[in-house]
Image (cartoon, rainbow, N blue to C red; front, side):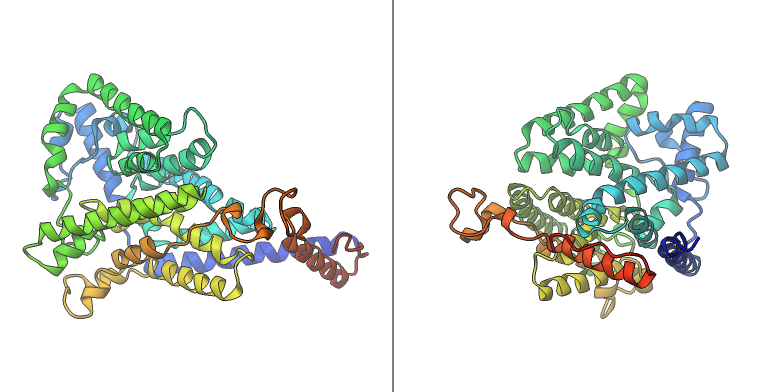
Length: 442
C-alpha cells in the first residue's frame, strides 16, 4: 500500500481538478446559457411529421405561431425523415448525444497534436478541453437549439485533417456531404480549389452533386420547391439586422438600418475573400492544414448572408490554432505570451453573450458591442498565425540535409520538451518518496 498510494495521488488530484472545472462550467451554463428549448430541432421534427406522416409539402410547414420553417436542402430532409417515426424526447436525446460525440472527435483532432507535443496526459487534457469548449457560446447555443452545426464541423474537420491531408482518394467526401446537407460548408470546396487540391475538390463536388441528385429522385417535388423558391426566400430565415446575425451582412444592416447598403456588403465580402485566398494559399504551401481550415471557417461565417451566433462553431479551429502557437516553445516567450492573451480574450469574448447586451442598440457603443463577434472574426482572419515549414526558414541551422549543412541539424538539437518532462518526473518522484531514475540523455 505504501508503494501504491503515491501513484494514486496525482490521479486523484487530476480527477478533482476535472470535477472542479466541470462544476464551474455547469454553474456558468446554469446562470448564463440561454434556454432555447431545442427550437431548431422542433422545426426539423415538426417538418418531418408534416411531410412524412401528414403528406404535406415540407417547405410549407411553419412552427405554430412563428414565421420559421424548414430551410435546408432536400438531402438534409431525407436524412432527417426517420425523425417522423420517433417521439419528441427521443429526438432530443439523439440530438444531444450526436453533438457530444461529434464534439469529442473534433476536440481530439484539433488539439490532439498539441497534447502530444506538450507531453500532457491525454485523458486529463481532453476532459479539461471538453469543459472549456462546452462553455463556448456557439457550441452551447447549437446544443440548446438542437442544431446541426457541430455535426457539419465534424464532417469537414475529419475530412480535411484525416483524408485530404493524408492524401486519401476519398479526400473531399465529408465536405461534399456537409454541403449537400447545408449549403454553407460549400466554402470548403472553394478552399480546395483555391489551394489547388483538384482531386479533393472534384470528389467533394461530385459527392454533393450525387447526394443532391439522390434526394431529387427520392423527393422530386420538395427538390423543385427548394431550388426554385425556398432557397431564395430569405424571409424564412429572419432579419439581417437581428443582433444574432454576426456575418458581414449583419454588420452592414445594423450600421445602415433600416436600409442596408448592399454594394458596401458586396465590397466587404470581396475584400474578405481576397484576404482569405491569400492567407489560405500561404497556409497550404507551408503545410499548415489547421490554419487553412480555421481561416476558411472564419471566412464562411463572415460572407454568409446570415450567420447566427450558433453558426460560429466554425471559429473553434481558430481557437485551436492560437492554443497551438501559444504553447509552442520554438517561439520566443514574448510572442507566446501575446498569442495566449489574444486567445484567452477571444475565447472569453465568444462566451460572453456581449452582442445580446446591445439588442436594438446600434449606435455609440452598440456599434462595437452589437458587432463584437464579427469584428473579432475580421481580426482573426487578418492576424491568425500560420506555421512556416522548417526548411523554409533561413539560416544553415535549418538545413534538412546533414551532408550539405554548415550548422547543426535537427538530430543534433536536444529535445527540450522531453528533458523538461524527465526533470519534472524526477522531482515528482522525489517528493513522492520513490526511487529516482538517472536522467539519461539530459
